[in-house]
Length: 294
Image 1 (tube, rainbow, N blue to C red):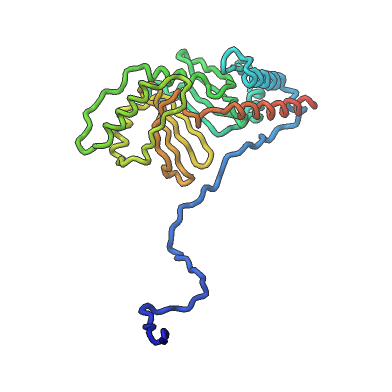
Image 2: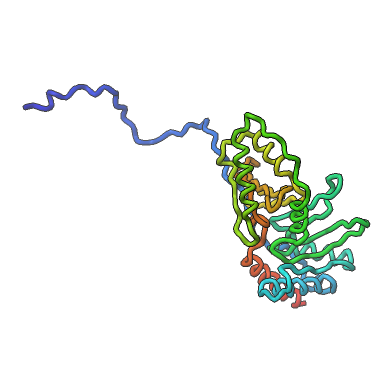
């Protein structure tokens, strides 16, 4: 039998090709992240210049001792404060140059949407500059060594203990919001200090922008706002219900890539990790040793 005679013509024309794929130039890809904040030692003045500012040098030594106490666990509390009251303008200017600005900034809003507290992390992770405007007009300026400044935690705790936002009836078209609110309430009731965060990922749920807006209204917006910069930004706000935070991640194009609600004492993304504090201690010791060369 001759099988070749039984072969019928192939119904699809075969086009010879080199195997190369020509990409459609009209495709619009999402841009890859272009920037990432990493540790960069600030541009320091000469040791002789720093040594002439005894106040700034004294603060640097105090920060090393504070970091050492926190890292080693010898501090009475998890946070140690170093006052900047009484420093001259030139000492403060020099100290600002040495500490620089890190990834995380925060504020606590006061009356009329005016920030009552401003917080800026230095390039030494876990070393925070805290400027507080008191009710009598006095400005309290200090540096705090901690995973997160205590004043932010206190403000969030006060908001959670205050009167909760007025409950509104859920519109009929918002069929998914009630279950999310029930889940968050259940997590708040069961959450205890020291537990890891209970996260509700809103990005994975079939929620419209109107649903998210209604959910935010029911949770309320607290006075604490934090912004963490790395790949893109992370915006963190506390809610007007206990132990609840809104955490939204943006890419380098300012598009939302992750939208969550966390039931936790404070979101981990805002805090300096123990290894970060240990690294800051090592780096700050190097700066102090460099100053002592003068």
